[in-house]
Length: 216
Image (tube, rainbow, N blue to C red; front, side):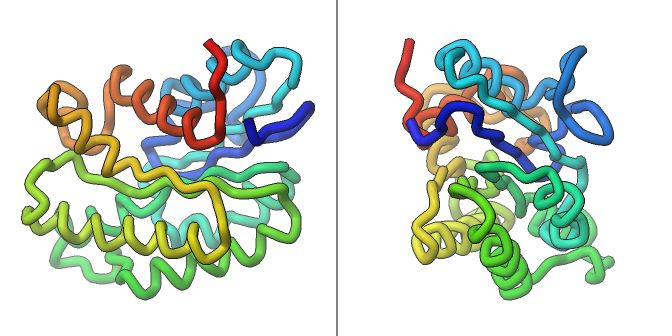
């Protein structure tokens, strides 16, 4: 397992991470992690490895794009001095291209997405032990669906960055495709984006596998 005693693990992203987490900082008492995969992953980590005394922080904000992460990175990541940063971003960067096609100012082109993401990685790596990059996704089994095809392009960008900087990589889209062999997307997310508790736990399990958490 990659985490060590007293490590701080910070999750940042959009609504998939947010799920009613505490403001301004998502940690502490009274379900401060919210109800997302972050809460599931954090709970399992703290139960599986109690001796590590991990500190988990959830800094997801609903509706965020990579542009928003760039604007708040200093206060919401660097100032909190994490040892590890896990990022799940890109869904809204693509989604706005399809649910708001007449508002191009809300669209984040692939080139901007990848360049901004890489900027954040380069700023962060000198100050942390490592980063975990998770792909954006769309719960659509048909790979020729226009939004699914576009989302795959952004997922490939995340993979390129993870490989370039030798970071932990979690392919959530590939994970959903495996699950769709047994469950319909509507059984996981009504809008094919925001997972129910089954879906949140599924993301958490993929995260745990990627970081090497292997205890029962």
